[in-house]
Every structure is written in structure tokens, then in C-alpha cells.
Length: 423
Image 1 (cartoon, helix red, strand yellow):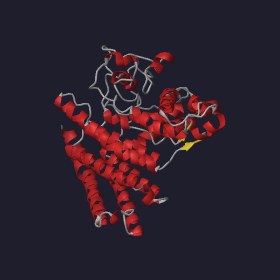
Image 2 (image 1 turned 30 degrees about the vertical axis):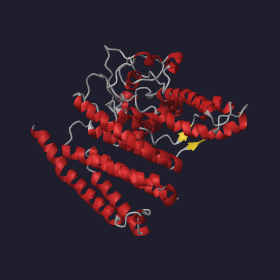
Image 3 (image 1 turned 120 degrees about the vertical axis):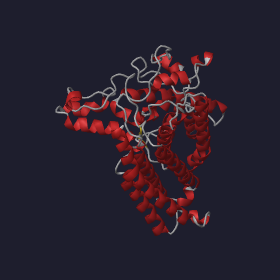
């Protein structure tokens, strides 16, 4: 946990700088592909995922280390060869776990968040799941386990492999010549994120594109078919926590309502999007029928709300950085209490981004939670030892944030609604 937190402290500012560069480049080229509020939602999703991972909130039924101890026919040292083998095997593992997440109903729930943005930019690469609480695919690492690739090599290579998937989430880089035949490029990945019928469920590869060509899921980006991004059942929220469980909620409801026991049991393993007979008519859900004719979510926002949302996510990143840099110092079980505060924070300001009338309630709940922590411990998880006035600064920020939420809910949202009615 602590080592991964340290890695994220280095990686996060790099990602943030690249996101800002893409934004500025888009403005310069008059082709801005990264609306601020969409980017805030994406970065917030990345925060929830990283907090979940750092806190170790996931269960692996079969650990890689156990596999090595049972089936290894050879034992490699941690050298260049073992890292190359690990990277190649992890990419094979990544292709199949990714492809299955697109094809099986209950697995789609953990992946829908990544596709939920109706934009395509570097920030949307950070839309990673918190719903993936169980790892089912360790068996796909069997080739590495047979060769005895050390578990430490796998542990280092996995986050590296994930971070290398960041760069190709952009519309600004066009086709890349001969590289298109070897690596996953922005063009390939635009196809993967698109909801056009021609592009659905294609290009699942993560680093090497040849997996798609080998297993029949490759599709080139076509000039005559511009990609349209999002998910066919649009999320219609900026709240990453709610997005993470939307599909699961629908599955549970459909399983409960299904009259046939067969449907109740098999709905989880059916192809993604499958519902029992006549359920589309009986229990309709919002679905995009024409990918070229639908309104993107949340495009009408006041500049005040947008800028406040940006400020909130940047402040949240400061809170998260302190957590990741002081995991050992904060200790158990306090790191889980800290993680809970981060999740409430993101839930609160993303509800405000959604113009929810309950946003002030969630902000009040966050305020009470933080005051309770400071009152009980007399400190914000040891921050006073670094910054003596930390308690006062945090309380002042939370008080200001609470009143800003009340202002938006009671004044700004109603003013905007009235203007919309009279326009």
C-alpha cells in the first residue's frame, strides 16, 4: 500500500500537467476536447480508484504468488528478461480481462466508468473503477507463473503497464504510420471508446495491438465514420461513485423483477446489456438510439460552478497527497477513515456539479465528519506536526465550502433555472 502511494505521488502531477497541456493545446488549436467539468469528473474518478487501491480494498481469490509456488517449472531472477516476460504476459492478461469486461453483463459494471465520458481526452483515462473489488483473472498470468517470474516483478510491472495506457486517450494525435501495426495508438483507442455500431466492442488491446488482430476484434478508424464517445446507456451524472454502480443497480433490479428463475440466475453471465424479454418496454431505461443525434450531459453550467468544481478537485488532490505520503504515520484503521472522508468529499462536490438539491446535505455531512475527526483526535491525522495551524485552515475551508454549496443550491441553480424558463 505504502509503496503504491509513493508511486502515485510522482505519477499524479505528471498526469495533471499533461492534462493541462492538452487543454491549452486544444484552446490554441480552437479544438478544445476537454471541457473543465468533464475533466473534474474524470480526475475525481481517478482519485476514488487510487484511494481504493492504496487502501487495499480489493480481494484476490488466487494470488499470483501462490500460483508461482504451485506451478513454476523454472524460477527467473528479477532481471531484464523477467520484466519483459512479465510485461508481455500482463498485456495478454489485459486484453482478455478487458474483452470479457465488454462481453459479460456483471463484468461490465466495473468497466462502464472508463467509457462513461462523452468526451475523449487524457483526463478520461483516469476514469477507473472502484467497483472492481474482486480480481477474478489472476489465472491469466499462468504463463508468467510457469516461468517463475517473481511476484515483485509483476507488482512493479502492473502499475507501469497501466500508466502507459494514459497517453493514447486523445483526439489531437492522428494516425501514426507504421506504429499503428505494433502498438495501441490514439486512433485505435478512439475506435474502442466509440459507440458507433461500426466500432462497438473493438480494439481491446492495451499496449500491443496485435492481440486484436490475432483474436478477431480489430477495427481501423474510418475517415467516413467519426467516433462518437460515451456509453449507449448514458450515465447522466458527473458523480463517479454513482456511475460505478449504475449498471449493477440495473442488474439487481432486473434480476429481482424477472418472473423466471432462469433469467434471475443467468442475467449476470449474459452478453452485456441483455435484459429479460419485454423488459425494455416494461422497465425502460434511457438509451441512445442515434449516436449522431443526442444531447451531451451537463453542458449548461454557470462559470462559477465550473471554476468552483476545479478548485474542489485541486484541494482534494492536496488531501489525497497527504494521505499517500503518510500512510504509515496515519496507520490502521485511521487510513480507512481518511479514505471515507475523501469519498464523501468527491460525492459531495460531484452532486453539486449535477445540480442536485441534496448537494448541501452531503456537504454538511462532510463538514460534520471532518469536525468529528478533528474533535476526537485533536488534529487532522498528524498534520499539525507539519503545519501548526492546520486545524484552523481545514475548518475554515470546510465552513466556506458548506456555505458555497448552500449558495449554489438556493440561489445559483434557481436563477439559472428561471433564466432557462424565460429564454
